Length: 299
Image (cartoon, rainbow, N blue to C red; front, side):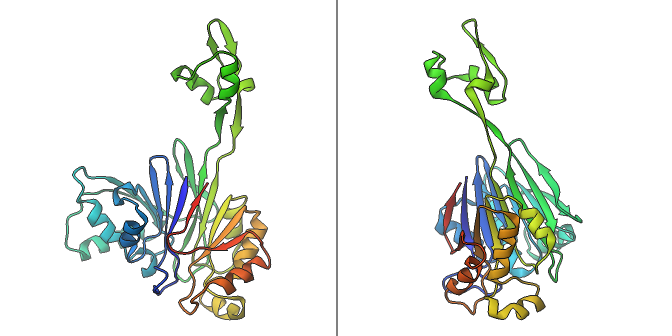
């Protein structure tokens, strides 16, 4: 599982930072959190194939978070085998997508499936074989959604112990991965003795918002919280007026939600360096790092 930050700037891209996009690779899934303008180019530089994108999670419909989406869909449609793409977004997403596709004069070959999210609190919006996606409403000038990717807990087999017991690797071990005991050469292999439960990873993505309780609830116990922090603490009033967060406020969310690590992004173009914002967050949550474009985080 790996995160790649493709764009860490706020509304205006800079020489160092593109606008919002983060890519999560997990097994056969490629999950794109937002898709601002220039995301395809960033993917090229990062070595990410466009056709590896299976889901796009849109936080809200401001241009710096979605203006790269229609180009991505058009390019993906050039593939010999039309790919499937699931798009999640706040209420109004179906209408916005319809307008986008009409505005750009091309016939999409991508098999699109759109999920409109309208929730009052933290709710599960996708349940797959290996992971779920939760969503929660945020507090912004446009309907805005925060997301959590939650890997399901899994059984891990102690191969060293099995080897000592004379049990080789192979398909016959599949039931153990489901927590079920097996028999080998007439002997029962107890799942409880040769497996352990591994807790799945949780990644939360919180973009444009003022301080709000759903953000904390959504991020609860995340291994990684990716959080917007448009301003340093001296501009807290400006952040409040525009319904954004300061670095310190992002740190407060991380601290209250008991997260493992906090990665900041969505920095205002006024900051050439995000060091000041990072230090503001570290004052209340030490395990903080300001993300930069093409930064990779393995879990």
